[in-house]
Length: 196
Image (cartoon, rainbow, N blue to C red):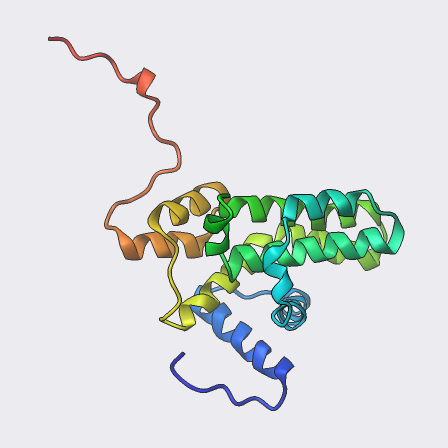
C-alpha cells in the first residue's frame, strides 16, 4: 500500500479500501453491493476458523436446514466463498481445488437464498449471485494494492479468467506472459494428420 489509511472507524477504513480496489479494478459496485462487501469484510476478517471450513459440506449442511438457520448458513457459505475466491485465492491450491470451486458454491448459496425467498427483501441475494465475479474482482484488486501479496499463478489466472471471465485474472495473466490466451482451443482431432 502506498500510504497509511487513517480513517476514523473500521467501517470507514474498509470502505476506503474497497473504493481504492474498485478504482484499481476499473469497476464500480452499486451502493448496496459495496456496503455488503464492506460489512462482509468486517464480519469475517476476524474469524480465523474461516480457513478450516469445507465449503461443499457447509453448503450441503445449509441446504438441509430450515428457515432463518438455512438463510444464515447459506449466506455465510456465500460470503466465505467470496472471500476465498477474492482475498485468499491461494487457499484453493492448498485445498487441491480450483478457485472456480469457491465461485460456483458461493454463487449457488446466494442464488438458493434468493430462490427460497421470493420477496423484495431477498432480491439482494440474486444480485450477489449475478455480480459475484465483479465483487471477487474488487477483492482480487484489493490484493494488488499491497505489492507483497502473492499474485495468482499463471495457470490459476488462466483457469479463473476462462471459467468466470474475471478481468483481474486476465490482468494477472497479462502481467506474467506476453501470450494472448484464447478460451476455445483447437480440438486436436480437428487438425489434419500430416503426410510423411
